[in-house]
Each structure stands twice: as C-alpha cells, then as structure tokens.
Amino acid sequence: MSFEQGELILYQSDDGQNVVDVRLKDETIWLSQAQMQQLFGRERSVITKHVNNVFKEGELDKDRVCAKFAHTAADGKEYKVDHYNLDVIISVGYRVKSQQGTRFRIWATSILKDHLVQGYTLNQKRLAEKGLGEVKQVLKLLANTLASHNLVSDEGRAVLSIVNGYARTWQLLWKYDEDSLAIPKSDGKIAQVLELSQTRQAISSLKQELSIKDEATDIFGQERGDGIAGIVGAIQQTFGGQDLYPSVEEKAANLLYFVIKDHPFVDGNKRIGSFLFLLFLGLNCEVLNFDDRALVALTLLIASSDPAQKDLLVRLVVNLLADDKGR
Picture 1 (cartoon, one colour):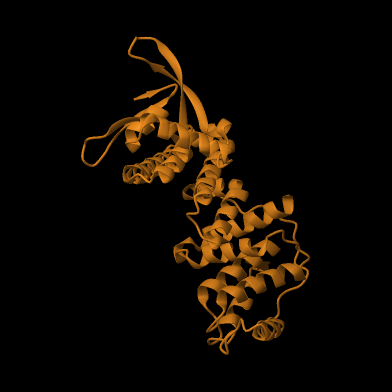
Picture 2 (tube, rainbow, N blue to C red):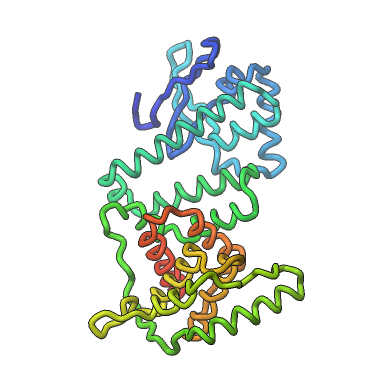
C-alpha cells in the first residue's frame, strides 16, 4: 500500500509467528520502537535503552535516521510516532543479538535492493525527473551503510569511494544501455607519445624499485610474446590520418584497460597497467588527484569486468579523468 508517508510492506517471519507492517520511504526501511520490540522479541525498555545508546555513543545522528509518521491509536486518535530507519534497526539488532533481527536484515536488504534497482533501471522517466541529486543520495546511502557496518574490505572501501565521489559518472553509466554516455570533449593535446623502448625501460626501472622492497617476483614484467608492443601501437593507431583515440584521456584509458585485461606480462599486469597509465598522463602534463587506493580500486573494477564491457569501462575512466580535471 502506497501513501504520502511511504509504502507499507508486510514482513512475516519464516514460522509465520511474527508479522510486522514495515514502512518503506526515502529509500530505506522504517520501524517504530514498538515494532522493533515485536520484531526482536525484547521488552520495550530494552529496545529504548539500545536506541538511546546508539545516539549517545555517536554511532548515528538522530536527526538523520529518525522521522515522525502519523499513527492511529486504539482510541481512534492520530498521533505522531518516532520511527527509525534501517541503520538504527540493524544497530539495535546487533546489540540484542537477535536471530530474528538477522533474518529481518537479510529480508530488508533484499527489499531495498529490489526497490532501488528496479525503481532506477526500469523507470527511466522517474530517474530523469528526480535528477542527479536523488542518485547521489542513494549511492551515499548504500556506501555509508556498507562502510559503517564494516561489510567491506579496505579495497572495497576504495571502490565505494570511487562510487561516492564520482556519482555523476555513475548516473551516466546507468543510461549506458541507451548508448548515451558520451566521451567528454577534451583539449588535451598529445605532447608526447609512449615509445616501446621507453615503456620497457620504465617497466625495468619499476621492477628494480619493487625488487629492493621485495615486492616483485623474478617474472614480474616478463613479456608474453609481443603483447606490450601491440598495446603501445594500438593506443597510437590512426585511421584515415586521424588518431583512433584522439585525446590524452582516451589513450590513457585504453592503455590501462589493455594492459590489465590482455595480460601482456607473466606477472604484474595490474601494477604495470596503473604505472603506465600514470606515466603516460605525466608525460602529457595531466595531474591526477586519485589517491593510491582509488587507483587500485579502478584497476580491480577493470580486472573483474566482462570483456563485453570494454567500451563502458573505458568511458568510465575517461569521465573520471574529465571530472578530476574539473574539480
């Protein structure tokens, strides 16, 4: 049931003994203290104590996770009752160590995922009307929820950092199936190409530096066939007298992608790909604000992608570079 105060969804436990009317609004789940008491099977005083401690200990900001919704009491009168969002519900569930709370968290996460994914991918008109601000809020909600409950590793946090920090680009990627993610215009003229001999010398120097710190194997940077020669030639390829990849950003993005995905080296492809990416940008006076973990995250995104997503990933990198220069 939908109304201006949100959508009501019925939650029922596996044994059918526990039924709760859950409110879905502002891209999260809301329950009152009375509903949490019913859900977790604890006394009202216990729930109140844990809710208060969540705010007292500074774990969550009450103004951001608490809202008042109208409730019709048994006497027929309407009252404003405090409701708490999924962040609070999860925090209380951890504190009371309720198995029922764990099952509810799994259910709520599934409901939110369906609501967010279906709502934004299938209803493109709504996405266009709501605009970028809502997309940023949703991405921030997802990222903050995962990070605040330690559900991701350090590398995962770096991925979330990219998602959170480049919401505009990700909003464009959601429209990728319309082929509407354009390569941004660039005035980045090629100052210096990356020669094969220069590339090999740079990789050799990198291996020496890493070996001193015991961070490279004997086969690090060992070439497999003519792979790296082909990649260096490919990013500088021309067609009809015009560069196939006309901008610095497009050449850098394709260089990063090809080295990571084509595995031209026996060992060290992701590190070498990131290194050559930065080297090429540096040769052409491009300054990046990526920190090391963000660049690691970017290489992981490319490494784990499907080959069919090549154009999508290249466009992502180019858009990230364009945003980086615009900040």
